[in-house]
Amino acid sequence: MSARVIEFSQICAIAAKEFRDRIRNRWVLAVALVFTVFALVIAYFGSAEHGAVGFRSIEVTIASLVSLVIYLLPLIALMLGYDAIVGERERGSLDLLLSLPITRLELLAGKYLGLAAALATSTLAGFGLVGVVLSPQLDFGGLLHYAGFMASALFMGMAFLSMAVAVSVVAADRTRASGLAITLWFFFVLAFDLLLLGALVAGGGDGVGAALPYLLLLNPADVFRILNIFGMEDVRTAYGLATVFPQALASPWLLGGVMGFWVVMPLGVALWRFK
Image 1: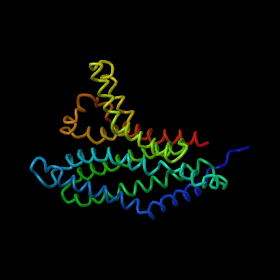
Image 2: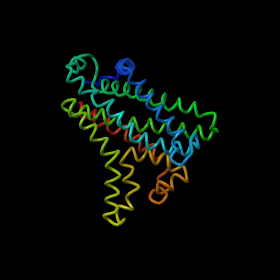
Image 3: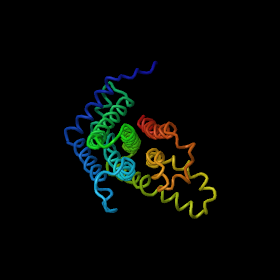
Image 4: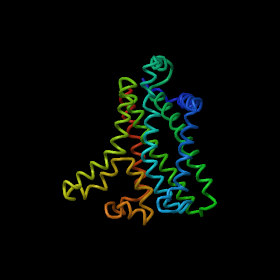
């Protein structure tokens, strides 16, 4: 018996419904507004503690935005997708969906793509509006650098959205799913670097110190940070990356591939478990 051919029209229909639901409940607008306000405040008032107000440089602005995005975007992505499947199960609509001529792959892919479209729209709209405001003060290189920041932020958001969908498949109910989502955020955003630092200090730099650059690749938030910080000499030195992260590993293509792995791997686990 031959395998059923994937129906992309089914995937698109589910994705469109997910996206419309997020538009209808004002989720996209709210997140875009949050990103816009925070980014504008950071761009123009981020240097107030040094006695200066106003836009200074795109490097300083991106360095400050990286810290904001690492805390905020993973949480938004996890909260967006944690109930994608388990929510349908609790509402009793999952069995109805699976009784239709649609495969589990099509359902999962449609759910993810719809949520990803909502996250992409809010992220690009929020930061893109700030880019338009700042554009008169930026040259082409600055605009390109800011566009790279937006793309990498979106890439990281997709990685955490993939984790959220995997959590939604694995969890037995929405309460457990939300707890797992918060745990993932706490581990990758707050605890991971502290654990590495603790291991580095406890080992006196031996063993862990040599493996540290590779261990950082195990966290999509750190990959995002390195992608944006390593290309700026002054900021890279301030963050300490110049001494712990080798130039050979800092290739945008390599780091982009690692981030792509973090997008695909959780979805593969989710599909395996969903089947």
